[in-house]
Image (cartoon, rainbow over all chains, first blue to last red; front, side, top):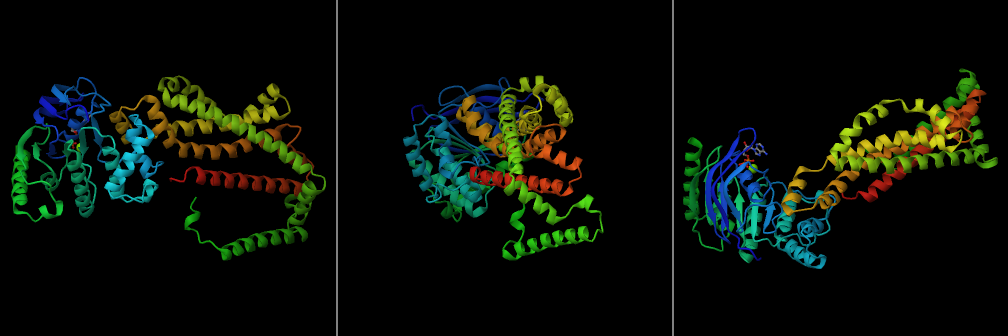
Length: 257
Length: 256
Ligand SMILES: Nc1ncnc2c1ncn2[C@@H]1O[C@H](COP(=O)(O)OP(=O)(O)O)[C@@H](O)[C@H]1O
Ligand SMILES: [Mg+2]
């Protein structure tokens, strides 16, 4: 991990060809190693922000200053690992082959990526399923593979777009724990999109609340709950519920505006 | 294939055999009692005798079968190789497809068997003209399934590949090609059946060898038992081909 993992946005706007303003004047500074969540109503430009960071937006739809790991967004940036909402597993590859797909494309030698991937599949709780095909895996297990694929990249910056959005509550709590422990282990920067406020508060150092389209930042809430956190224990913690209510009220303000 | 939901086991097989036996028995009786003129329907005993002699006594059917299968194999291999090649080129270059698409669509809309006389002029009475008819059918089937397969890549895979910085070649090899394989395989299965169709059709029109040519001769002299014998033989060959393709597909595409 060479580059510093900071993400800086200064008055970033995104206006698509059809005149749709997806993001409006967003300024945000994410420190290396910070875990930041963005919450906001659907269609407020959250995915667009991640796509911008990953260099996937068409040229000249974005304006303002955007730097990721110290340089402007560029497609295929090796400092970035991007995890999509859907697992995007290749059905013709086994769990192991899927988990190493990212590292494979980025040219990590076979022995090295195997070592990383086997270790990560163990960490995400898939030991023994290395040679299963995606169709044999449950929804949650598939998302675990996608998580392993993301972490196997060893990029200092993780962009995660509602990765647990489609999971049932139990599985979601389990995977949040897995993600937190992986993050705790090597302290990468995480920019995490979710529509689940409880998830945002549980995981983050900071929660950014966005308004309905055109997406603006309406609030930033620091989550100073101690770490390491236990996802399950937090659900009963009064401090957690206080923060949750606070974020919720900010979100409502953003919706009303 | 919805075989999975059908009940299986010895009872079903016994039932199937019973139905078959009943049909053949009824056929034999209707023919013997002349309820229908035997010239029209032949008789199972006569068909069996024809097949026995053609296969085990003088071997003429084996000879014809050999020619037909050789033609089918050549038409299939050449037609699908060309179909996959052009299909992939079209997937890679939409400009190329835009250029060729109208011509190919027009050619594909043409009833291919109408080309057979032309192929006879070009390639003669022998194997060449039969292969050409089979090729002209297989090629388009495999071409269109390859294009469809190549276009059917999951958009999430493309997003993932771009974020990873995959090269064009990597996207093709790691996402486009493998996701196209099952669709291409459906085209190959159909293409093989159509290669057989084209070759037999070509043989019926004019040929020196082959089951189609034998069929044509037998029909012209009202040897109905022989006609049914060859039809049954062709049906068996098709079933064997389908079974082999299914077996291959299950081996190659175990991930499905
Ligand atoms: N490539 C695009 N072209 C035009 N409009 C787009 C494009 N991508 C997203 N949008 C629009 O931008 C808005 C924000 O989309 P998105 O970032 O996906 O929202 P979110 O992820 O917050 O639900 C939506 O109205 C969407 O329709
Ligand atoms: Mg989104």
